Amino acid sequence: MSDFHIDAQRVRTNFSHAAGTYEQHDALQREVQQLLLERLDFYLQQPEHVIDVGAGTGRGSALLKKRYNKAQVIAMDVALPMLRTAKSHASWLKPFARVCGEATSLPLPDHSVDVLHSNLCFQWIDDLPALFGECVRVLKPGGMLLFSTFGPDTLRELRAAWASVDQHSHVSRFLDMHDLGDAMITAGLRDPVLDVDRFTLTYSEPKALLRELKGLGATHADRGRERGLTGKRHFQAMLAAYEAMRVDSRIPATWEVVTAHAWGPAPGQSRRAKGGGEIASFSIDSLRGSRRR
Image (cartoon, rainbow, N blue to C red):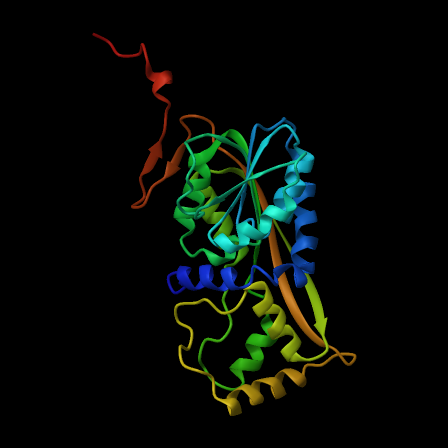
């Protein structure tokens, strides 16, 4: 993972610009959302506090509020324009709060969250120890983390088309399921379960896929991307290479989707620290009366 670096400011800018067009292109996001909601069947409690991290335009937040009407649901996103758009999904009868914040620095108290939900957001974060460390910090013991993210096979056709033209970075890279699972265990999350599904969406032409990516805000955000404008000849050569992949008169695009859930650790459960040691956390209340005079 050492060469996996995301430009966080670029991510925020991309999604801010896409706030008005996102829901015109989010068919896959809605499909994956249903996979996540099915995992909530494993959560048998009635939550008080539910957080939707990377909430985007708030469709998922509204579904969480519908499922847990008595819970406080908070839609959180780094892109303020997305949260402004999300207001349209918060009804008077089923309102949810909207907070601008980052997944690696959640503006929430320790052990305050029953369910932490995130649909197709974590792929834009390169610091997995910070990400899952925050999840552990804010989850109540036994609280549920459930999320989806893209795997490395995502957009493999577009990546191959660009690779046939030059050796520059043109398509965002995504982490393997095993990297995610290792990071979850290292952070102290309990009993992680990860699954992979592959979706193939088809388009009339390669440009239609590129328009969709731009409309979603899911454009290239690696720090190592080529910063200059791509020449017209290079771009046309990429399109021609992609055209050669046409199947049944349609252009395919693969999306590898990882879905996962895990549980907040019990009080005092140790977790691995950088450098190989372990960190154990205890509430102050649990230590009261144990000191000998």
